[in-house]
Image 1 (cartoon, rainbow, N blue to C red):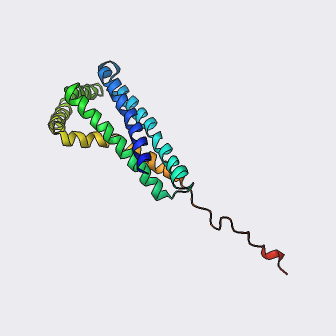
Image 2: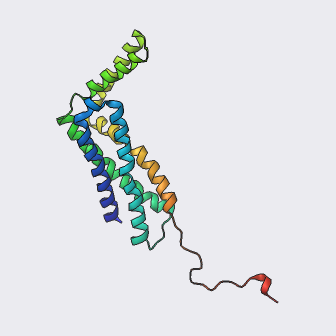
Image 3: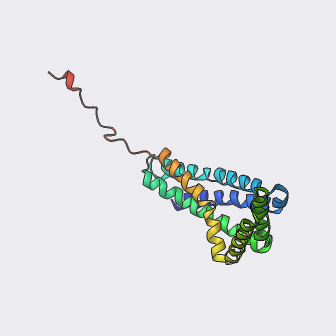
Length: 186
């Protein structure tokens, strides 16, 4: 079971990590909104590994049967490993390649608020919130926790769906002769 979880978790994590490495340098050109769409689409695609991991476990380790609980456990562990890879990649990118990410994000959010017609008072409140966020985000543990929470809900939903789809209980009375029908008895 461990090999399956690690293999599929690392594959999913690699997909998300490659997406980050490939798109962060172009974030200024593609914009924050498009980057978010690309990011979440890639997360959903990478979490397909949850499906394949649960199915591989069911078919190759569990003899073709798996309960919802066991399927969920396999899937959530794959999700956690892939999210950890995503966090590790973001930490490297954030502290080495894009240390000005929060400043750019704050400017984007303020521009978005201005474009929606926010008053000066609302812009000041937004600016204070972004300053507080920047201070909080500078803590590596908070940064990692916030980053982990980005893909995890997507992985959780995919895990729940896949566990429901792939659960398969063992047939009761497998191999037993069928019981005669009551209407045939004399």
